[in-house]
Image (cartoon, rainbow over all chains, first blue to last red):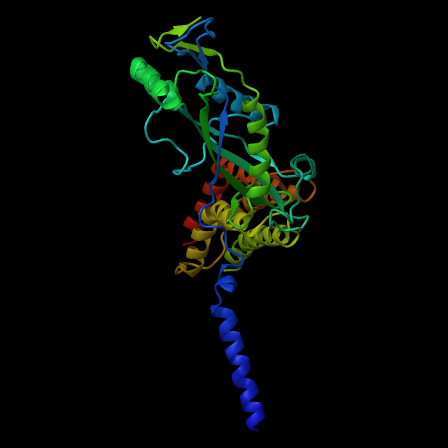
Length: 250
Length: 135
């Protein structure tokens, strides 16, 4: 009798422990922060004066800066999305994503959204994932579709400083890196992405009305980020700025 | 009394068959639960304008229950118009059984709403006249 009572108490304690365990409570819930953030850079550089011949007491100084234009970055992002088969910024389908929509009209920020793409076998194959990996139901009677919202911001600290005050910027580079001109100094543009994935589902003969909240957005968004990053890493610096005057050349 | 019952049953059957269609769609996985909520509201909106007064008149107090020739004619007209309405609506919604593709059910329900509204000028006066005469 005592043994039975003890076993029952132990069983209740185990159930309580399982229910109160943090992992048990998290299971099945969508992650709190559903925005997928990534940061990368695109090349840019400082071009120094030509090496001097003979005695060079004065040393070498920054002569030009070469940057990638922000608009080239934004255009590349749009191109990649379209090449992957997404319609870009279709009217009437703009998702309500307050975390992604820029509040101010910053020129270095763009907001993109796609149309609703059926998540069929072809799309899954293209992305290289499965319904199981996305934590979606394997029920063939349920059809899913995805929509991607994306915020992209491009920022180049050196460009912004040089536009603001070219002389001070040049002087800072000299004081920081010297006048040997041998050290490679980067003028990279920092590009930040914030992706959001919306997954909707429907029956075989009905419309998409139900928004699914339990899924893993990483396989699709990571694939998309890699495609975009590959493209923008191929960009060549096209803006040439005179380091002394801050004037744009050619 | 019997005439009113026939009309009431006719409309009630139409509505229930429509709901049965929705349950079959749901059961077969042709629609999901969230679709059902929206589609149920749409289906009810098709039948409610007619079913509501018919049920209300069913409970209303009757005057002379004797059937006159005029009342009988009004009844037949009301029955014919009601049959046309119900058959049209059910045929349109039932067409979803043979169609395939995304949004077929909602498209057909929208069409049924449009057609139902389009034939109101036939059904509304026929029912109104019949119940007006028999109340």
